[in-house]
Image 1 (spheres, rainbow, N blue to C red):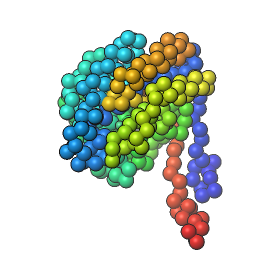
Image 2 (tube, rainbow, N blue to C red):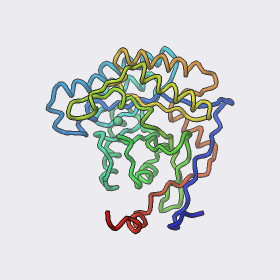
Image 3 (cartoon, helix red, strand yellow):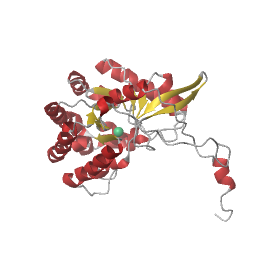
Image 4 (cartoon, rainbow, N blue to C red):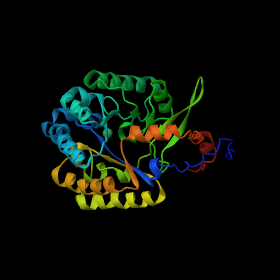
Length: 309
Ligand code: ZN
């Protein structure tokens, strides 16, 4: 099957059966961006002591608070750690590992990959891998692109490095096998889809001149949005995948509100709450047919553009 330009048609992801007859899956994930996120937006932000302190709150205070919260509910989580964060805050990264959580790859300097060529992107991937190995002795199975900005060539680079899964795309409610075309034939990467509505950055982040509008949401309102998504995804047999940042959701009132949702989801016997690595391994074991996700034909777009525009 192909579209009008001859490109293969994309099909939606298939429903996924969950272990033990459960109805849905859930993962509470944390991106330990710390200073790297501000430095990636503007390298000169490193000269701003207060901005750096806002970001350092994540590893210094937020992560320990969130680790205590996860322990209270017996939930294992996935922490995405840029290499730069690992090198600057090695103790907290080791604490995350010691508490039994998963460490995954989140770039080296939290560099946006938008427009990066494959060679430059490969250097960031390898530097990130080296840092996580050096600090925590970890070889991650998962990757999340900083700012969820994946390039069309990125899945091939991840496959070359032996990654099992990626968590940066947004075209499904359930995980799927993403087809990766390589010189040796078609391979696949498990994709664990995310969405901007299930991210605390949009709710809480305000950094003058760097990010956010200045509106900082009420944690009860943010968590109500996430709970509504969880309830509906559970009905649909989907995978609820929440992304929080310790420098944001590690603040006391926000962590308390998040804990209310975590407690409900973790206690729900119909929901499998676990790490992304475990969800990805489950999906890999299902033997799903890989989905091809293809770019739009830009020549076709150009050919049909209104000549007056
Ligand atoms: Zn990030």
